[in-house]
Image (tube, each protein chain N blue to C red):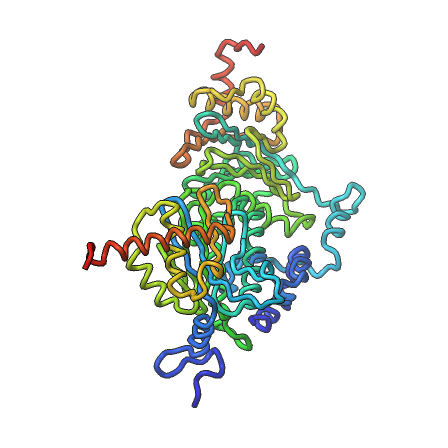
Length: 247
Length: 291
């Protein structure tokens, strides 16, 4: 008997297959990476190579949930739209009832709660997206959270979701340093995406947020220049590694 | 999703008029049912934890009905009384709260020993004016909601949020006869805060309030002596005097003056003095210069 049809049925070995299949859908989506520095959080996304006639400005994978919270996702873009809209409403509702902006943990918990609700109901399927949520609370400490289709959420120092996320995460684990400066954090995000984005800097989008809670979208030129710096560093390192002198 | 189960519960309980109007604005799911948030629930909590909604008497329009029954020319007019004096003010060392303790039913003094300060939690206080049952019930409910907020968010609730919770809870019953004029006060991470919330749906923030039938007398004394930089002793004395003078002139206030001091790490109960004793104590003092 197949245990993957109805959502609300466990398999004998304790799996919810629909949720696991949703995670597969996430793995098909374009990669998104998040890095937390000392005073900055960085979100980077892989831009799907735009079709010639498509207006690239209308395909944004980094969404603002409120002035001080930002979200990137990987997976089914349409599902993300629904979650983003619900989260935006909740941000305003929270401001109205509590007279305070949401904390990053609160809105993450809310989004994860919705994702979980859709794993325990009849007639619906789970959302096919994982999200990376960044921002600063009033305590001015940078925050990065991740949610997934099962409704689990946790805080991260750096993480990646979407296709080739395993490779990117391994790269991050190897190269992450505590309390990185703004520049180093951005460079790490770009570097990690360059590992997997074949076509280079022009298909990478970077957004950052500092303690002033203002979202900054780096222009294509800025990303190119960072990629160029990385390229230069790489060649310098390669040169220093090869045995010097004439052979 | 949970629509079937929810609908059957709410067919027995007629949700208060305002809640059902709100619920009719379907959320983006297209569910025209009561929003979890309307019931004070986080999105997945079971219905048992919803904040209480009461069955409304099966009258077509409860608001109109009550308006009619309490109007001057109604046959058996329902008179809703608000005999009391309560006050609270912010100053440099926190908040002072002072209340009387008399409860009246018409011209009958029902009690001289009513507790009109409700200790919501160790750092939030609520005062009671108007219907005693309404105040104590809803403020106890507020205490429950505040505790749940603490558990969910791993930090104490702000006074602004607590007062707004109370205000939104009673707003659902606006016009249906709730009688509550309360002050919610505490010290949160933005400092000492004081809010006035009433059953008309009003919610105000200020440095100084007095609520009840004796409030005008209390304001007279308070406004004459209030300064932000009073010492704690002076502030407590001012608050006590203000309530005393209100009990002296207002027939519906009296009994004992209870004083609380809200400090950074919570409130402290100061003392409870009989207004009779205070009369003789103040009479023996030389009258201070007011101007």
